Amino acid sequence: MKLLKLITKNAGRHKLRTILTVVGLALAVMAFGLIRTFIIAWYASARASAPDRLVTRHSVSIVFTLPLAYKEQLLQVDGVEDVTFGCWFGGIYVDPKNFFANFAVEHTSFLRIYPEYIVPPDQLDAFASERQAAVVGRKLADRFGWKLGDQITLTGTIYPGDWQFVIRGIYSGKTVDTDETAFLFRYDYLDERMKEESPGRAGQIGWYILKIDDPNRSAEIGSKIDARFDNSWAETKTETEKDFALSFIQMSSAIIVGLRIVSYLIIGVIFLVLANTMAMTARERISENAFMRTLGFRGYHLVGLILGESLLIALMGGLCGMLLLYVVSSGVGVALSQFFPGFEADAMTYMLTTATAILIGVAASVFPINRALRIKIVDGLRVVD
View 1: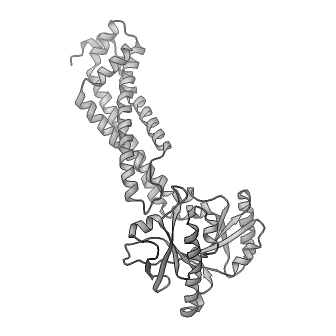
View 2: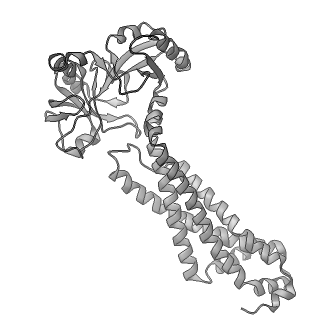
View 3: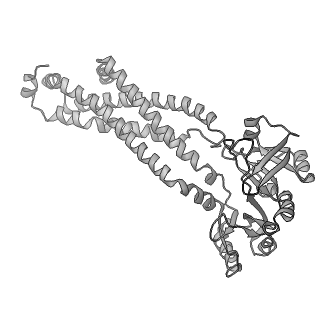
């Protein structure tokens, strides 16, 4: 108990220095946690993927289409229970700045294969009964103030012209990682118009989504599918939904790598801030430590005092930083809710931050401890502050 009291008093000797150190540590810890949270949110689509879903796309690139006729052949593959498809539309609402994902999907099966998109039964029936019907995510509807029955016009980029839609459903996500910002409309509406305006583009879709009976057979089933379409004019590449999502994330891998490097640099900043404070403390207490040794204090007593003070300051900075992280990440999560469905610091981030603070507290005390133990008592007593 006396040792703990000495540690607390030592930490409070230079109040301004200690406060500034704690504030610096808190800001650095918050920045580290915020960057880690951002990286985790970036991978939300991969985390939300289901292990029993495969995606089949063109073997060259996602920008190339596949024939709609492939659907019946896919249903014949052993292990495939259900098949649906989607097509990136690329429509603009009012202004190009109003970006959001919009897809043409098969209305009879898409929401069946994606149970995480929760749509009330009456709205699902309305979507199935009207050619120009659309289902939108809750966050997207809130963003533009849309409600059921509203008529929306999207200007096509990939499929030119103005396209009229009626919102007949608003879906909610089953989990926090579920994207609630998508705009889904019926593929048959798109295909019907393509048959009239551009017949060569009719009957073409972007990718297939397959529900399989056993996730452990995903590689086997994927190989069978791709082998089935070998040497055709539209060869396929089949992969798990998670791998499909990761392929898009990898397009921005340079950003992720950059953020990781910055997070490591922040850890270095945290260490330097605390190490500088402890180094100044060690320099000021040379004679004091020597005097304590003349009074009978052992080496382990000095180790406990210095290590305890370093850990105390590190933990204070870490706790304040985590409190700031909770507040700031909540605000950032609201601001970025349209882009990241689950932007919030998770338990692992807080645990990692705490462990980092402890490790830095230990590391920052190494030099002061070494100096306090190595200096001779006579030499220490000669030092005049």
